[in-house]
Image (cartoon, rainbow, N blue to C red; front, side):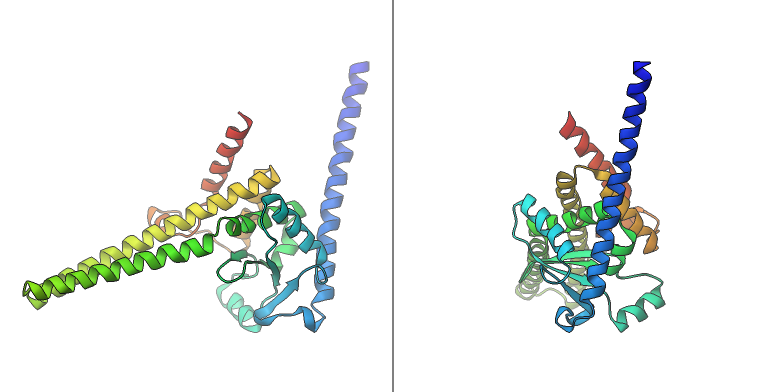
Amino acid sequence: MLFKQYLFMTLAYSFFTGCAAYSHDSNMMQTIQAEYHASVQISAARKMFGKVIVNEQYNPTLYAAVQEIAHQMGIKTPRVSLFKGTVFTEMMSNFAGIDFRMNAYARGLITDEITIGLTLLSHLTYKELRAVIAHELGHIKHNHSIKGLASYLGGYLAILGGEHLLRNYSVSSNMDTKKYLLINTIYTTMSTYALLIYTYKKSRDDEKTADREAFMITKNKDDLIQSLKKVKTLAHANHERSWLYRTFSTHPSIEEREEALSQLQINLTA
């Protein structure tokens, strides 16, 4: 009898706890959406290129979430904006059948900033949104924008240097012009493809690094994975994951990212 009572109380507690968590999650997203609709009516909150300011004055609930996660990561809170799109964005979305606002991205060249697509607010839960924010802040924490640009420019300068050396050698050795053009074409083509492959590989590694940062904050891989699946579905990104697509893709597949996060979870709990 006591066991049945204990089991009933445990199930009841789990049920009501789950309901309370869902209610809080739903209320937070409703608050964020309401604050957006209020801020977009204020001209001072609107920026160029279809962005809306997110700070303590405009969209404070969303900004507080970013502040909290940035503090946990030990980094300065970056600029934050919501991307509501422009007339051009709307035209491109209708033409391509893709909602370009169903995304988020980070940049950190001159000033650090994360931009959150407006469509995410109506399709993600609050926990999923926090996971996306943590992922983008992970990019900023590791300076992925600057490092990515530096590595690409370094590789490009190396290619130019190789072409210069090849040209000097062709002149000093009186190489036949046709032979030089053939060698130069082969060198340029192969080195360019090698640089692209390296750049895309680095980008995929950066995504996994940002995923790990998000997991360390949320302690739950499912929130991030669910948000990625929603983005993929709404963006109609159902490309076949052939070796060629994987090689020249800037992002790993969701399956790869889920596997990496699962392994991380196992390592941390071991």
